[in-house]
Image 1 (spheres, helix red, strand yellow):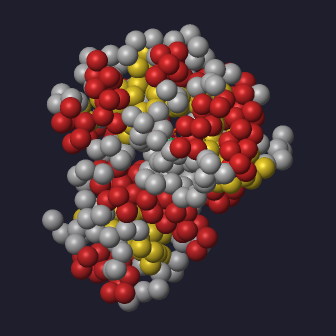
Image 2 (cartoon, rainbow, N blue to C red):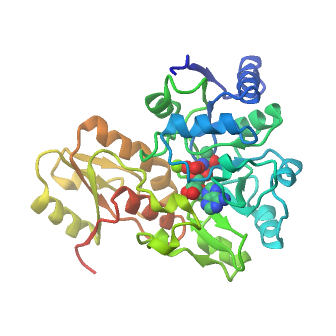
Length: 350
Ligand code: TXA
Ligand code: MG
């Protein structure tokens, strides 16, 4: 059923109008509705994590496969203990360093979290966001909030309210506009539910930073290669194609000269290039979008999804992408691009 989507702004929590927007959003959530909310990573499609019907409507609005569990967002440690059965020492260490922030920790769940939210798994991914508006909305609603990224399933995640309008207008009760997201990529996801910690999705909290605290952390192989049949259950989200514009994306690894040559030799009509900031000028083509300076992974992360979305507006059929560095936050940028490309990578030089 089509919903009447209300769009509100919340930038300054001291301003009465913005505070009012937060309270309205919280009320909708408490009553089982859907609200697109800002976070420091990407916008989230929020509902009461303890209400199976509300959570079902998240899956319906996104067109998300039912076997892909949702992240549960909490505003404080009291809420954490309501959703996590036990908090392992590894989780404590990570929370102390990175919460509130862009890190989701998978732990054993309590009965409060219905199977609809955890997609039948005995675990729950929990995150305490850093964004003041997200925290204020969760606090005011008084319930843990399930929120996947606020995009249609398979599309690039949303990093502005306009992206949420493009994907979800008529499907949610409210969109809360707080401008563009600080990081622009989804949170790092780590499981501490097994014998050793496993990084399932890289994000703004890097693998290197985590290993400094928990040196035995493993990197799940699906971060950089397609998931094998037997690996499908540890993180169901890893098996789906993600973040794609309509165009075929091809990741081109190597230096700029090799990239330019590859583009010149292989570009057909409606072929575009996604290059680093400052490289467009040297490309001899108007069909270029820039996504952050070379080596500046935080800037690349922040701009990536808006850039990928822009290719649909441009009517691109193919996009050749300059491959980012694979260390630090670069691993997260690389991981999203690999998935957007359906793992299609070419190497121009090594
Ligand atoms: O930054 C973020 O994490 C954003 C904002 C809104 O918080 N949310 C987000 O949610 O990206 P989503 O649903 O798009 O991605 C969640 C990922 C999926 O790959 C899912 O499979 C995995 O986390 N996940 C969630 N709960 C899990 C669990 N219990 N076990 C294994 N993987 C889980
Ligand atoms: Mg998502």
